[in-house]
Length: 407
Image 1: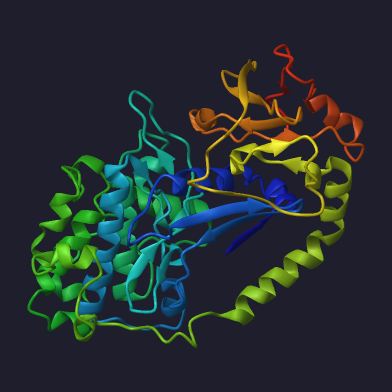
Image 2: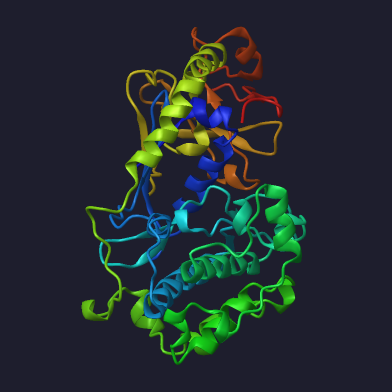
């Protein structure tokens, strides 16, 4: 279960990312991604209940200097390619392919996770924002040019390179140096450039060619520019049984790497970082929470469960399941807002109570919407930012939303 503090997400300006991740995962399901089962929230945290993979992430093994052999790397690459094929078929650009987001299951398959900066590709809409991890960004993303699916293939090439050489191809002491290397360094690998463990392989030339073409600076020359089948049909991957792989029905003896479920997470490293953050932000978090009353915010775009004006969001979590969208015995009235979105005012005629549920198409512009109950705990400033008047059956009720408010 992924747990995200509302206050910390606000401080780090990542509220949009967690809500976007939930939205994307809600509409996809595949064997090689971390699938979402349901999400919920309480007054302090947002929660995503995902697939449980017990094998640890790829970064853990690279940090331990584990040298994978060619068969293992080919197996991992085929797993990643299948996840990308599914995402791209659904017009989703991941944009954050890196070892930290590649997680092993107990059987040794590598699965793709973390969709916080992913984007849904839309017709006639170009994606040009600069988001991602510095060492894994494609040149076109750094230059804020139009982003296409080949951005993910460049990041894949960096991951393959790192598994072979145990270091990234583009390094630097600062982010500027890393970006400069990505934009200007030309990677041309030959068999002789590979470590000895790969040099003796009969497919060493194909492996070097595979990485070289994934890391082409020009997106039009990159492997996969003509579609992901160009990657799948590359000579280095010619012996992969794609259909068997996609359904994870490969015989156990043919799976080259099986992780140790008891030793795949660096607790000391993570805990040290968390302690540092807690010590640095503890008083600030309390201040932000008190001044902005973030624990009073209910994120409608995180849940499409019906919300009653009498709901006690302070004492119990609110939860939804993807398949539960039925609204029975109710009369729905559309209330137009000033943001090209709408909210449904659902009045239960049998009980006379008011219930509110956000329209399903709230995600069309990839915005995160915050619904604020009129509570005595919310200070006057936030009352001006978000106001809601739950008058029964009044079609003139409106949600006033300031575009510069909390995100």
